[in-house]
Structures are given as C-alpha cells and as structure tokens.
Image (cartoon, rainbow, N blue to C red; front, top):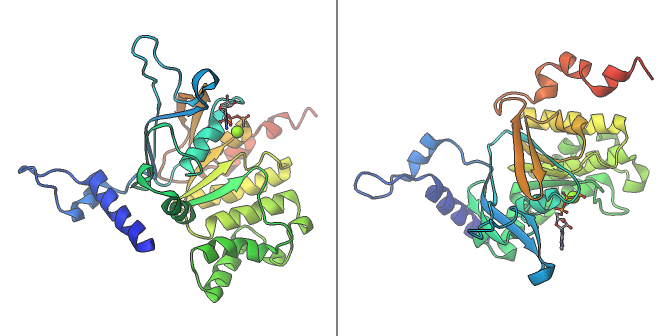
Length: 303
Ligand SMILES: Nc1ncnc2c1ncn2[C@@H]1O[C@H](COP(=O)(O)OP(=O)(O)OP(=O)(O)O)[C@@H](O)[C@H]1O
Ligand SMILES: [Mg+2]
C-alpha cells in the first residue's frame, strides 16, 4: 500500500507541475523542480454541506447565487513554510475546514491537493496513510491516550508507520526533548499539567516529520503561561521549516501567524499577511518588539 501511495504521489505531482511541450507532449518529470515545490495545501471551489433538503446546512463555501445557483466555494493555497491562523466566530466553518484539510472528512464538492496528492481520489485506507504521513494533529482537548506514558504516546504514530522499536524510541525522545519534556517521558497524562499534556501532543504531531502541523484551538484549554510555552514551540517548529495551520478565536494567538484568514459563514472574507513565508514567524523576527506589543505588556501597568 505504501508503494501504491508513493506511486500516486509521483503521478499527481507530475500532473500538477508538468507543462505540455510545444508538440503537446508532457515535459520531462525533472522539469517539475523549475516550478518549485508543491504548495502544502491547494484547495479549489471547496463546498461542504451537512444534511439534506430542508435540513441542509452549508458549512463551507457560502450560499448559492440566487441567479446562477453556484456557490463561491473556498479557494486556498498554503505554501511550504507558511504559518496560517484561521479565525472566525463560532459556526463560521473553522472546524469544518480543518477536518477537510486534515482528511478527517470529505468535501461535498471541490478539489483538495495535499502536498501534491489529490486526496479526492483516495479510499479510506489510503486517506489514513496520508493522514499518518503528511499531517500532525493538535487538538484543543489534547486527545492523549489515558494511562499511557508520554514516550509511548509519541511513539504511537511511528508504530502505525511501521518504524522499528529502537528508532521509534530515539525519535520520540528527540521530539519530547524538543518540546522541553525530556524529564517527563515516563509521566502519564494525569501526572502532567495541561500545558505539558499539550506539549506531548505537539511532540506526537511532529515525530513523523509531517508536511503540515494542523492545530484546532491548540491553546483553547491552556492558561496564559502554558499558551506562551506552546506557541513558542510552534513558532520554533515553523522557523525550522514546518508548515503550520492553526485555528483560533484569540487575537493573541493569531499574532504569531505569518498569515491570518478570517471566515464568515463558510467563506474567506479576509486574508492578511503579517510576515513573509520565507523567514521566521512574527514572534521570532524581532522578539523584543513582539513582546512589547503583547496585550498583557500594554496593560500590565494598569492592573
Ligand atoms: N455534523 C454536522 N451536521 C450538521 N451541521 C453541522 C455539523 N458540523 C457542523 N455543522 C454546522 O456547520 C457550521 C460550521 O460549523 P463548524 O463546527 O465548522 O464551526 P466553527 O467555526 O468551528 O465553530 P466553533 O468556533 O464554535 O468551533 C455550523 O453552522 C454548524 O452548526
Ligand atoms: Mg470549531
């Protein structure tokens, strides 16, 4: 199956980047490098409707045009190395978008290429391989396995990927060190603080070296100190080249992103770039200036 998937990856990549030559024949595969790497996310005319008939809810893509009957849909391209925050009020479609980007749900219509792979054509098993190989998930509620030590939690996705025990252990230890938990590897979730549990979840998300880290309200259950710890880790991961898409309600979290999208009623209504794709995220570009403009810094004199 892994061979099948890499074959598929090769074909789709080629298709996505290959230009036809003057005689109409496809150009050689090697030319794809001239076009640069695939975007990590390429979404076209994406729609998601839950339910049917009178009970149908258009969660993503906006309402149909009264004349043409066509919905605008969501178009989105995220380049490698970007750090994107998706904001929007409750019910605006953030989790729906995240579930589709994470291959946890399928769109009702439209096209989604993940790291060059057209996920629309994959069956359940292939999708689960893509999820395991391409995406690291972080959820608001941590989603750790109860009564399981941190090291085993982080090894788990490597076990699914068929990595041998010694290598699993080495990589899981490195990931836990990266999030500052080298001294907590034997601790179970109930022996860790909320912030530490989320750092285990981040280590688990990054241990497979995924194309993208996808986080839904990663700091939603954390106090401000743990929020800063987790954001600092995500900042560093992005600075080292990892693509990050995170959903958040909080301006304080969105400040860390290089780009901020705003959803209203399932449509992208604003797309603001805060820092270039290439280079460090805002908090690491000029840490002193970033910290000085933090809301708590501005208000700390008054309360
Ligand atoms: N399984 C479902 N069945 C029917 N409607 C759904 C389903 N999931 C979501 N919806 C509807 O789709 C819309 C978008 O929901 P979604 O969960 O994506 O919002 P959200 O932006 O993540 O909100 P929140 O900030 O509250 O988490 C809402 O109107 C919601 O009621
Ligand atoms: Mg949500």
